[in-house]
Length: 117
Image (cartoon, rainbow, N blue to C red; front, side, top):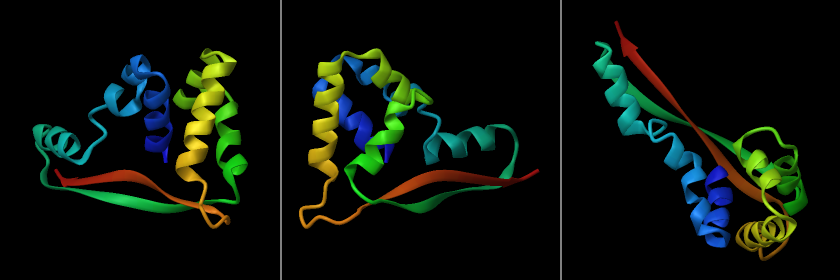
């Protein structure tokens, strides 16, 4: 879900790519998480995706939380000018709005790590 947002930001304002959470927090991927837990001495470490279906009634339902100024993406949007914010919104809307109408169905992903001490 956030990947779509940061991809739109980079398309509109490539110099802001370093603010992308994937760039800022490279640890939040299966390989680095596995290595970190193994370095702590845990055994039988496994990393598993937790996928959650997220359904938005329409684009406004998706977009509105980004205007709340809580979290990295909303904070970023609050820091840019109206023109840039509108270009990001249009970029996202073009990527996410279903061609047949209806809801926008995305998947949110978190990573779970388990090991044995």
